[in-house]
Image 1 (tube, rainbow, N blue to C red):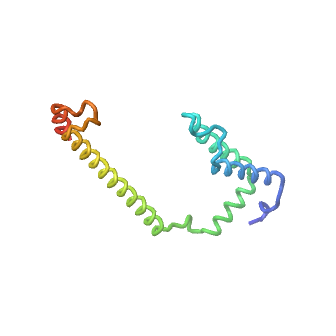
Image 2 (image 1 turned 90 degrees about the vertical axis):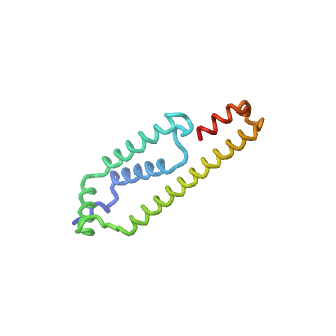
Image 3 (image 1 turned 135 degrees about the vertical axis):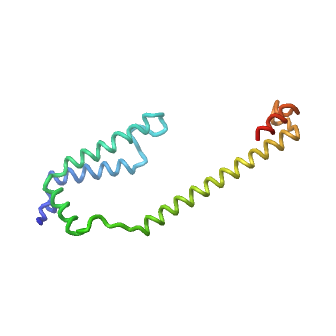
Length: 143
């Protein structure tokens, strides 16, 4: 295995600098088109970042890629390392977070229904035309 890819050639420096610019743009909060502009705001992220990554990969000299792949193959002869414990912890965190969000939503909807029913039964004038008795009976029956 040669270490020719470690030599700083102009092509390598160009590809490294371009890759650094693409990564900086991807992580930067500043965009060419601000994200609050509908459709176009996210479209630049969806198009420019993948195009930049593809162009950066094409700019890397082929011998550098071959050497890097050979070095990875020697470092990990059995393939990619797998850490099932870390994966299980991440999945557990997502499951717990999803369960907490669902519990919060169920409680929020329950409180919303209870507050609306209470307001309708009391005929709270703050709820406009829902204060009359017939509408209150209809809406409470829907819950």
